[in-house]
Length: 366
Image (cartoon, rainbow, N blue to C red; front, side, top):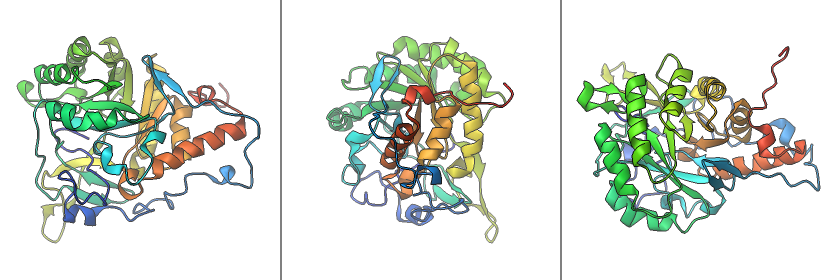
């Protein structure tokens, strides 16, 4: 979801009738269903061995999975990540959307955008590269065409916002403020500021402070800031965003990467560089969530290679209050719902509420 480089695609192969679907060549690039190239095993295994029926959950205990972030109540901590789940409706015939904690819609800009030309997706070992280019319908059309359906759901709607100047971030948010049923904004700051020589907002502390402060001032709804992992000190950027008014932080966005066809000596992606996502980035994303959670007091939403309940629990124990499922939506749209059930089973077996788990990492000797 890296503005200048990538955004994860509309991942559902069944969405053949939607104008925003991936192309035929992009379908070929998707990881095999149930397994990511180079992954440690089937990603459908949402429950670790200790969560199997052999260790039946404790009876008579009902764990509370509800969470509160910036005054917004979410029925559970499992959300779908922006750029991987369309506008939500595309998946309505595949899973029960009402069982999700939230749907983070694809990035919305002030005006419609067509995105990058193909090829835009390439499978890697244990993940994928993509440079979709943030294709979207624009803020006004989103309010009229997409938001009415989202308002009918129990899952909360989080609107991802991006732009290429601070003024345009504000303009987009001011347009979206007219919509009813939005739970929060997610500010994608992995975008180049075209008025400052193309410096990416999320890689410069001063630009991060500028865009977060301006967006918070304009926002009618809570502001979650999505941090880029392409920095040397994630804790510094977490503190800067918090100080500028962020109500919560979501991290991480995709890592910048690339791939080359050695036979033709050409880039695998038309944009040359692209965003790397999937299981391969999970250990680094988990480390960054842990560091950010220790650096700030505002809530953290963890993102990066989550494909099982065990993955999600790692992020929660590291300090995340909620998690987002991204690349897994491409090859297995039911992943998020199984993660919800996996977390519930774990909490029931451990006789813990979700709040008891958040940030509960035990470090020997400390």
